[in-house]
Amino acid sequence: MSNLIICVGMFYVLHLFLKMTFSLHKVPFVDFTYTEGNISNTTALSERMSLASDNLRQSLPLFFVFAILSVILDIDNLFLAQVWFGLRVAYLLGAILNLYRFKMIRPLIWLPSIVVLVCMGCNLYI
Image 1 (cartoon, helix red, strand yellow):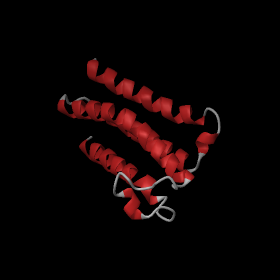
Image 2 (image 1 turned 180 degrees about the vertical axis):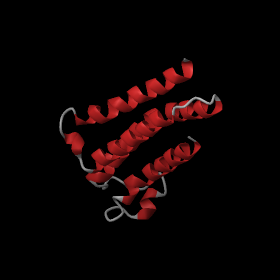
Image 3 (image 1 turned 45 degrees about the horizontal axis):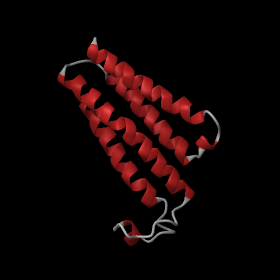
């Protein structure tokens, strides 16, 4: 489980740089480095990456709490944690491919990740 926690942490670090990475050809790097920088010229892909990062940040703290408690309490939540991580990777790929322009695609990927978090929490409680 500890290896997966590290992988999820690195996945989050990747998310931090995606918005900038996909707009460097339109926005100078220096504009990303200070608060007064003009980053209004970012690409549509960069905006989708920003939204995907925001979505990840909403469930990431709960995942980390449940994953770390699983290690401390010696509860086997590894499979559920792997499924959650796989769904988060799928969510990012959906944002990259712009699949969320179609109705009901986003909830098909996002909602199961929330259900998996609930299952992880239930395993800790029982």
